[in-house]
Each structure stands twice: as C-alpha cells, then as structure tokens.
Image (cartoon, rainbow, N blue to C red; front, side, top):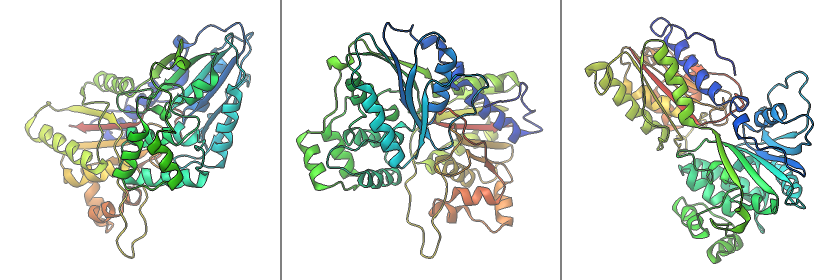
Length: 442
C-alpha cells in the first residue's frame, strides 16, 4: 500500500493528513518490509510453506521474493477472498495461495485446512516448515473437531462475533473446537523444524492468540472454553459439550515435546505501526502521543473515552498541549443489538462504531478531527476500512436527517458515515495489525 513521501498540511487538509498517517502505519506492517531478518537458511531437506491469514498472500510473495532461487520451496497458504496482492512481474510462483471466507468460515477454508494438515504429515528432521500466520487465520483455517460440522462452526462463529467476547475469548473456544489450531498444526509437522513468522493483530502480541495459534502451545483449557460458551450463552452440540467437559478436546500445552526447537518471530506489530504514524506526525511539526496498542472494550464506549480526552486537550491543554496527534490501537468489540421493530439490520464494524461513539461524545468540538480504521482495509464485513469524524460531521448528519442514537441502536455505522461522505475506502491492504485510531487536535 503506497503512501506519499510528504504528508499533507494537517491544518489545511486534516482529513488527508489523517489518512496519510493510516497509510504510514499500514506501510510499516507490509510483509516485504519485515520478513528478511527472520528467514532461516535453507535446510538439507525440503522447505514447506504453510499459512493462513489476511496477510497470507503478501507473506507468501515476500518469502518467494527473498528465498534463494536455487533452494527448493513449495507450500500452501489460505487468505481471505480478494486479499491476494497483485503479483510482481517476474516473481516465480512457488507457493500456492487459495482464498476462503472471513470472518465466518466456508467450505473453501475447510478444504484448505484439510490440505494444509495433509501436507504437514510425512516430514523428516531434515525438513523445514515455514508457517506464515496473520490475523483472520482462525476463520480461514477451519477444521472442525470430531462430531462438529462446518455448519456448527459457522453458527458458533457468528454468535461469538455478535456476543461482545474479546479476541482471546473467541480464540480459546475456536482452538478447542478445531483439529488444526491451538498448536495442533505444529504437532502434525513433527519431526520437521518449524519456524513461524507472524503478524500480530491482537492486544499484547501473544502468538498463541494470533489466528488461534496453530503452531504454538496453548495455555488455555477445555474448562476455559466451556466457561466462555456459558458466559455468552452460546450453544454447542451436546456431544461436543460433553467432550469439552471431559477434557477430551484438549490442546497441546507448553512443555510438549512437539514444540522442541521451534521458533516464533513477530515480524510486524501494532506498536510498530503506531510508532511509524507518530514519526510522520512529528515530522509534520506536531506532538504525537501513543496511548496504547492494547486498548479493548466496547467500540462505542472506547470512542466516548477518546472523545473525553480530545475535549480536555482542546479546551484545557491537558493532559497534552495542542496541536497534537493522539494515537491508539488494539481490538475493540461490538455487541450486536437487535434492531428496533421495523428497522433494517445495521452495517458496519468496530472502527465505524468507535467513530459513532466518538462523534456523539465530541458534540462537534471545534478543532478535533479523527480517523479510525482496520489496518487490513476492511471494517468488519463491509468495503470500507473505517471512517472519519470532523467538527461538522454532526451538522452534516442533521442536515441529512440522520441521528447518531438511531444508528447506534442498530449498529449501523456504515449507513451513517456513508450518507455523510465520511467513509474511508482503501481496499485490502495485504497486512493486518488491527485497529488504528488517530485524533488530530488543532
């Protein structure tokens, strides 16, 4: 994803400036810029590349570009539909990339997971497996546990996504209802050496949570998964619940010999991308403050907290002096509410709902502009990356007959920001370091 060499003037073009910060953050996380230092030398035997995630296509191309031409290389990676980047001219195709559905798995993802697990069998100690893991891999690499159908997994996934559960909770359940996640893929690769290259999209950068950790040990338990299912009122087939309660679907744990000699490298993280955006802001003459790359919580409520901070800066110069940029990352959640009677279901994702809560709480505060977007270029299941908020957003909405409360009630951020022309549409970025939020206070 390209971004211009020089940022727009933040005072004259605040919206363009915020988009430039977003593009700088994404650029920092592109696989081709981050992979080379972590590639091991070719082994005596085969090199097999396996992977899953929204950055999978770009990660595969990076390995193809950087791996010695004379060294054997093959494999299979699954990514989201439409997330395969354009192929550079002259780059040999040595890794197969297939596409499947996200965030709700489909038959293509099931077929890809079956093939990946099959490729992992029959390896030797002389072989190397490069596992390319990025956010989205939980849905893309779907191989249901015994006595669980794809339709069951689809329903459970939908209910988890709508429940308000955080990513660690969702992925705990997904690991224990899978035959490939939660370290099981690494166990299948034994006795080959496994090197995992991962792009973090989770608060805290825990590799066991990213894409449900198919190649790393899992410290969570079947009992944890049961508690999460009960906490959010999510049903699973009775036979599967019995297996969970008996501990029969347990994952490989830390200390398991299957992980001996394996390596995991974080090649791109949310904090690195926030730092890249901060450097651009400072080069433009603005102070830049990173709140955290681990912010979680209900999207609209996190938006309100950010609004309170921006208003304090704008009105009182506390805790930061203006002009400044305030940055944050992490992964918020959206609890999907039943729309009011007669109302159509809403559209939108975490970034848009954050912006609705932000706009409502800012109440047209002069001098405050904001952008929230998902760094993969897709906010939820829509075609936008995120949305902007400006001092005149509410005025333009009112002129169009729109009310923030009504759109929040039906989780319809897309309809609100689309109607006022404040959506950010970038298309897939071919990486994924999760939420990006930037507030510009002038």
